[in-house]
Length: 79
Image (cartoon, rainbow, N blue to C red; front, side):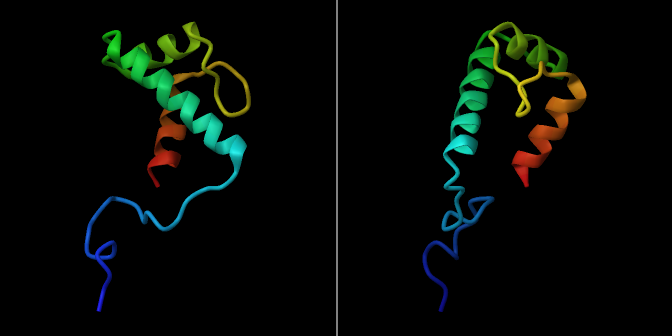
């Protein structure tokens, strides 16, 4: 018999999580930055890139975002 968690479709398995504090801090910063930029009216990938770069939310390697790097990172995080 499946547990209540296994019967729900969260889009991810909530029993699996990343305990790396650096990755967690990075995801938090990116999430906060995306919320801020989207809240400011960004509606294209280019707007997101420009907004994140303007508020100094960097890519995982510390560089500025490009449309290609942001698209790849959003895809990675969605996996």
